[in-house]
Amino acid sequence: MSAPKLLLVEDDTALAELVEYRFRGEGYDVRTTDDGDEALLLAAEDTPDLVLLDWMIGGTSGIEVCRRLRRSKATAHVPIIILTARSDEDDRVRGLETGADDYVTKPFSPRELIARVGAVLRRVRPALAGETITVGDLALDPTAHRVMRRGQPIKIGPTEFRLLRHFMEHPGRVFSRGQLLDAVWGSGSDIELRTVDVHIRRLRQAIAIPGAADPGRTVRSAGYALEAV
Amino acid sequence: MSAPKLLLVEDDTALAELVEYRFRGEGYDVRTTDDGDEALLLAAEDTPDLVLLDWMIGGTSGIEVCRRLRRSKATAHVPIIILTARSDEDDRVRGLETGADDYVTKPFSPRELIARVGAVLRRVRPALAGETITVGDLALDPTAHRVMRRGQPIKIGPTEFRLLRHFMEHPGRVFSRGQLLDAVWGSGSDIELRTVDVHIRRLRQAIAIPGAADPGRTVRSAGYALEAV
DNA sequence: GACAAATGTTACGCTGTCGTGACGTGCTTC
DNA sequence: GAAGCACGTCACGACAGCGTAACATTTGTC
Image 1 (cartoon, chains in turn green, orange, blue, brown):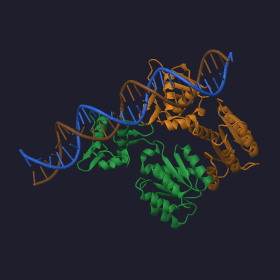
Image 2: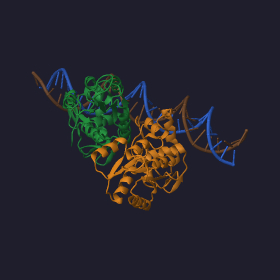
Image 3: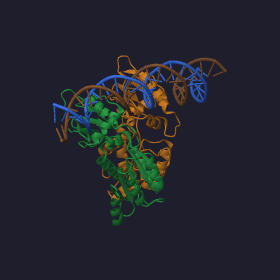
Image 4: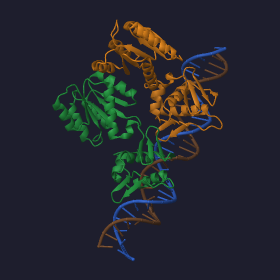
């Protein structure tokens, strides 16, 4: 979970290998396919954190893959970067309209692509860029699986960790119990809504420090949020 | 093995001598050639730890050397730094596309080049940038295949050595069993995940010293990490 | 203030994960 | 070929963490 998962959809084998190699070197977990239909399968199987999508591929066309990724619930919010050989303005517009997050024209340098991917991931999910997230006096390091508050290490279980991480990635935002179940437990989970309460309680207890206010906020009949104290 | 091996491919004799002299002064083991074909031979003969490659050379062109180094299995992952007189963006892009790791435009100061080489080596293989890696009270000498803790030599098997080395190259970071299998056993290995546990256990047992805390950390349902004490 | 709804808190059984010792095998060394 | 070593696998016990229900408390409404 610590390495960002990329799905590369590219039918130029040489380019695909190059990109894959460079991104692996940067610590990414890369899966590659040259086929649009297979891309959708792979994405459904193991939701990637970002999709690099060539515009011109066999199987399903790029624009169609893009559209169908957006339509599927699991991949609806996964950022997509379009790769295309044509700097055609029409394509650009259509790509962004279909819901792509960025657009890179060939030829590009791997370094540039790495930078763009980093930028998009930082924007969408700060924790994936390999940085520690900080909200108020809380600090969470995703790669080290570690939480600190005011310099003190916090002992925390796996579920509470994921829960806190989700809150810290969207500070201040209120999530309903259902949304939290989807985000933290996974969308297919069959868990009682009230179970969330218990983990919220455990999380609050774990991060409680005498003399520090509880950054947790309960919004009655709406859900929970993390307050940036 | 203790000195990092550089392969310098440069046809400007004066510059080559200068660079070679300075890098030898820094403790590097440098071999020089002005010919692309010979460079490939030398690289195949004794895999260097890093290649400094002039863009404009006789024999095979720089880009071709770069490509063929990547294609050969032994040198596929050897970092390459391109040296070029032209700051031309096209060259830069092509160089990076071909898989170069960095790019230095002439004229450069030897000091700058030394810094860049150091940076690339540190990133790719930390153990090569210095003689020993140190984390907390643990010291690992990759060249001598030796591990010390608080001055005491630690007896350790080959697998445990690679395991520890991997942890020490990424201190604090949590690795899943699968990631450790990939990194330590090789990505093609067909080994049980639980086998990792046993080697973790053996490693812990080996580096245990009465009165010293175990720097190993188990992150339940996530993996293992080395505590950066 | 009375009532209901929503949330906080606690206890408990269950499950999966982990630590550990033991065993068999292949390889090297002498 | 005997002995030692490193390795991979398995089995078993321990226990942390999980989900749930049941009870307690708070909040909002009339």
